[in-house]
Length: 103
Image (cartoon, rainbow, N blue to C red; front, side, top):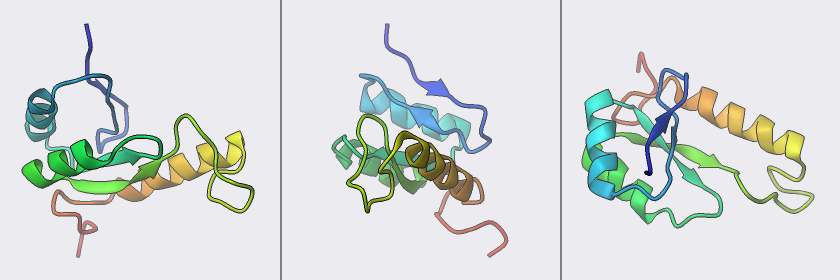
C-alpha cells in the first residue's frame, strides 16, 4: 500500500511515493498545505499540477538521491541536509498563494 506521509513541519512537507495525483490533490486541499516541494531527481510536472490545482506554492527543490557538483548547492551529504532544511524552513512562512505571511 502506498501512502502520503506528512512531516512534523507545520507546512506539511510531503514525501510522495507512487500516489495518484487525485489523492495527492485531495490531501493537499484537505490539509491546506501552503507549499509542496520539487525533488531534484524527479519530473516536476506532477508537483506543479498539484500546486496549480490547490493553490499551494512550490516551496523549492529538495535534494534526495543525488548530490550536486562540487560548486553546487549540495556537493556533500551535510550540505544536502543543510540545503533541504533551509528550503523547508523558508517555505514555512508561505501562504497558499506563495506569498510570505504578513505581506
